[in-house]
Image (cartoon, helix red, strand yellow):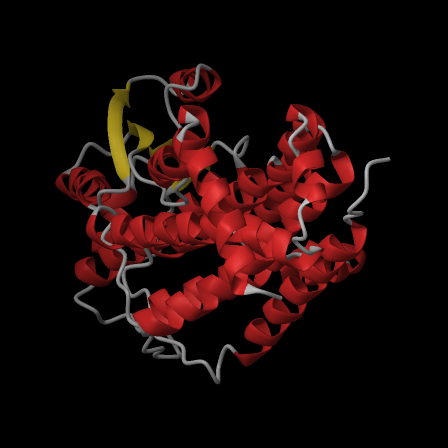
Length: 369
């Protein structure tokens, strides 16, 4: 391989990209826009649960309980109901997601030291929100009970719980780093999926084939400009993650840069492979979207835990590079993971990159069919 030929091909590709406003927009603006949209839109935090209250007790203790729900920040008291039938109507009309039904002898039972019943109805049509709401409900009622009894009632086990790496349990702290992997998987595959196909469609591939440039030099030259573009995209995404979304970066930037280069090498090589096989920009871009976005979004562990998937799907995730880059980004951002701790992901990303690059070279035929 002669570097001067690789550099010439890379220079030609870079000029082509710079002269194409659409390619430039896709290369630099799309990751930023996607990160902003998905970063703000995707959240697992549940706040402001619309709550309706039917208070038969109307005592200072029942009002205090309602105030504690409001002050928790998780529940928004939207209305105080007058009739029991209003509870069903409020949930049916989606005016409330949670209904608190405080019985008439609620405060009397508490003053006598008895267990005071509190009926809570949760809208389970959104099971995820309902599950989280139940956890919040238990926390608020437990704190209220301890405060009313002066902390006399103690649980048989005194659990001292500490949450590491994400003590505030903010969903954006693990979603945004994973989002970078999903976005870059799509961008990398899309960028290079058009390169070879574009040459065939414009009729310039014949000129390249007539030159003494070798297949390896051609593929490497095509990859280089997009590698640097992808690297800039990741750098901008990491900066946005830290400074706009306030996600802590506890690991090494140098390690992140190194592992990003491995992921980009594999993703860009996959795009080239698609472009070589498709030979049409339209078909290549469609294939790139299907093989990059869907697996990265659904099977990388970004949104859904891989351990909860059926075994065949779990095995399928092993061939998806975004799975390893998601783990790398979460590890470096939240845990400050080292190269040794990420050795498996590093090795598998390297193997994937080398395999896809070798396949691209093998599949590309330097002749006019």
